[in-house]
Length: 392
Ligand SMILES: *[C@@H]1O[C@H](CO)[C@@H](O)[C@H](O)[C@H]1NC(C)=O
Image (cartoon, rainbow, N blue to C red):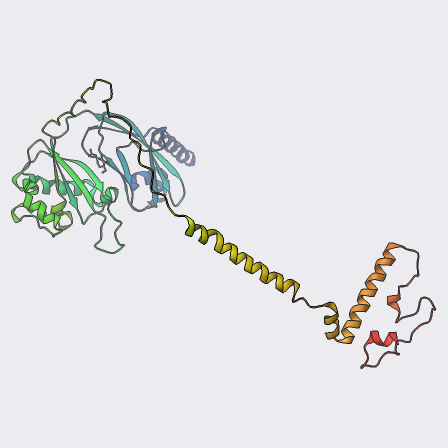
């Protein structure tokens, strides 16, 4: 029995490995229409823990982040964008292809609990199609991009615009985060949203309601910054958060062919005669003397004054050595002379080594010439300094 169980386990692991490596999801989409693909965390969760449900009977709900890029390229194709608000939310790939072609997208999911990764491959084939001639762009103020991309919400918005346009043949062309169009990051408070632009297109011409946007009085009102309401008979928003901002509605009529730019006219190739060169007059002469005084003479005079002040202080007000000695305390002066004498003696001793074994500066202990020892108690009087006492 145990052998059988491990065989089942082994085969499952093999199957998952083989299927996981080849998991390729294919799409064929037309040019000029919105493509949305939701990266379901549940799907990837099954890749991470394929057997936990089977054996342990429990399913994790791990935080995940996604990395998407074109195969062998660092980035996504230019028309495709990715968004995920939070590791506990699903991610979305969305965008509108403008040219036919084929893109292979690699999606890596990183499990933020176990740091396992899983890879899915998306093959998107873009087929050529006619661009819809009538397009309109609406701004939905009370929405974030992730809340609009799920297909149910896209359908709700589509239904509202179908009523506004009075036609069923309508497709969503583009959905853009307002932040990508120069919008501001909202305050992190309830009731503040980033805003979303939704572009829809149709083969049918604009309805009466949409044409109101083109009227000059509408444009005047909006330019004045007034909060212009959607005209009553045109207001079809069923869900408050899907309501459009009437003033930011824009219509694009691509039904008329754009006239080609005018062909540049060819000249003879020779420049026209422009007359003789007329050199400009030389400017009037200017008196530089005041400037000279300010920049040269004044600093010079200041420098001379400072110099003479310094010279006076240095040369005429110097204290003489005799004057200073006269003012110094006798004991201090004596102490100073002793130190100088001792230093000289030590220098001499260092110069020629062969003289008395003991320097004169050790006199208090014994006399090197006489060999006489002085009594250490002899100069114990506190009133006479030690050095003076030895000299006596
Ligand atoms: C969709 O919107 C994005 C962002 O504003 C823009 O770059 C892109 O050209 C738009 N695509 C179409 C088909 O309008």
